[in-house]
Length: 601
Image (cartoon, rainbow, N blue to C red; front, top):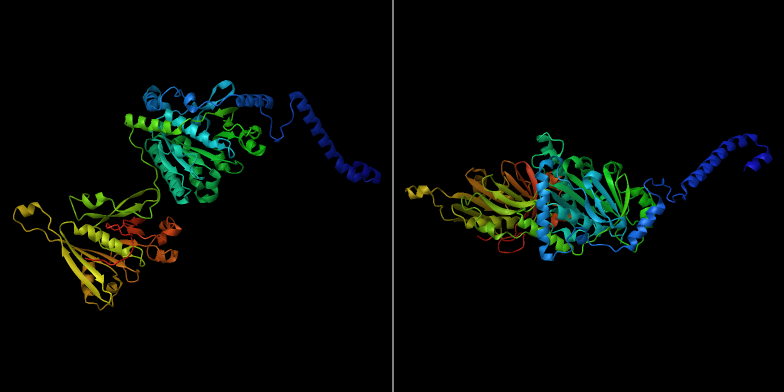
């Protein structure tokens, strides 16, 4: 182009081109000079050359690892010589020593997770990972077949074999079916496990992590401590391990704020995140990446993925025939290692379970539970000996969902009237049957059943149970009057102010009487006035958000319901004490499925 401009005598264009040519020539001369001084070719990934060792040395060490046979995790941790039945004895002694160290003079530094061996490095030297000091969070990358799942198993098992459940807990979230963490499910350290690809279950896990974060913040603030290590009784370090992190990010983007908060505050609160993915490119935002100081990269498909974590293309050069080989980069140095896989993860897990039982380590309370089941049979104990002191105090109704845990639900008989609102087939009649069958076997109740007749109108039947024994009876004083309880099905017409049925007046008197508990079922809430008619409402969702909100279900509670909840018999929302929460009603005690049917008295 320069020659063309000279021939055409275009001097102005020549003046524009010459400075650029001089700059390109100077850059080329500088690059050639630098290569000659270093004596090595340029990095094809375009990243800056490593300062800890040259590429030839790293390649030589990697080839040396290829030549060495991988040693098992049992051998690495000194457990290979023990029989499977004796593993728990060794684990118990190690946990004892760890707890003594924690309670000794150096306890001010808190439980340390440093120097956890996970494999071997150059020369057969053990490679250890220090999560709190190098992290406090880690990003693990590796393509399919790189040995990432086995590495996660080895790392978590090594932690569990070093520290008792009172010092370290795990939450495992797997978005590819649970293959990676299934052997770790039985660890006594595990306080949460999601492996069924259920988004509802994963949401509960993320909510529980957020609540645990707030709980620990409150503990630290209450004791005016800098971190959880400064508390009189520090809570266990919580390690959240997420496999297929990119799937979580894609399917639940609105819940990334919980993980960002964990990454930001986890160091001082004793909470750590290990995020695993096949492709690290763009999977972790800058707000999280700023708090992740430990990068572990096994074999990846291209040099850009390797450079994202290591700053070099080394991980892209790992041979596919050597799974488990990777690099640990803590921000200061890159170390090549080979993972030590467990010979039997089940044996090591069983050893931890037996050691926890031997040392009296109480069962760790789970952070969250699975969602409400589709069918909940009533436990036998709830039907027999739960309310011996006050038979008319409450009746078991089902399971309630706090958004994180499912808990047994009891319907208090002292709160006031109960309205059950829902369409046919949802379970209104079954709730009445459940309450009536339990009250029928208890003393001191006058139960009035009201049902609609097939030809129209209503039929009433009253049953009085045996009187309750009391000290007054032994003194010759007549027993107290039985507790009045009305159970009314299909009460829409009776609640209508224009109803001319003979039972209308009696029903309204029972609804308004403070000495009578009335439980009535409605097809709609058209004639229901709250709180004049009832103190507790059990509303079956319809799936129509507008209709459900008009029935009294808050929008925050509707967000907890799934698409199928409007079609599950017995799935409802209880509104009481200014609270609303999903419930799953128990099936009738005779084993019939939950649904509407005829009440017999």
